[in-house]
Length: 217
Image (cartoon, rainbow, N blue to C red; front, top):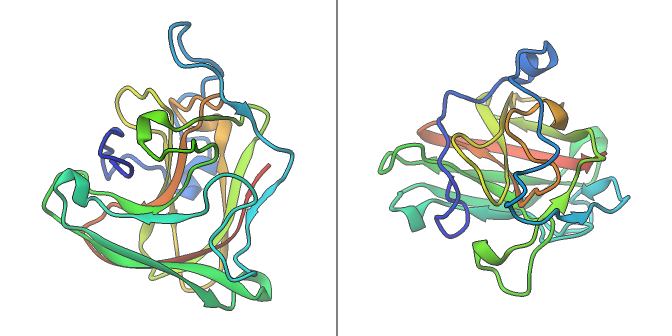
């Protein structure tokens, strides 16, 4: 992924389960509730606030943490491009949504670009100094999505990841559709130490999708 500083693990494009797959119980093992004793400390307890962002106030900011920000892969030698902007007309007749567009390049293997949310940032923005958040009492990440009909990926990163990061795939079609990510069913996810949540693309070529009403509950 390398969405921040090029230090995050890389993901394979064909490993994300579709929304249909996950609801049918085809995901792998459940999310872990604790890392090894020698691992990083448990993150800050997640606020009771359910709504992260609805984009109705003309801002990409979230109710806590850093707002949603676009990340390309140029720091890893990639040639992908990405941009995001607020657009009028969101899900369920809301005022606004966040539109993300760009092109996934082919300069590096396992390219990934997306819009990312950091729940517990530090005063400095280096990846290795970012804090984490404890979402172990949360069950679902949900949002509405629409787009060009391609498959997109939710990726959640911990400070220490071995192998492929936890991912969840969904299709963004022409109509607003709710995506519900079952957090405790994502293989390899340490919910006590969530560092970053990203929604993006990893299939080479142009892409366009929008999200709205992002919640963790």
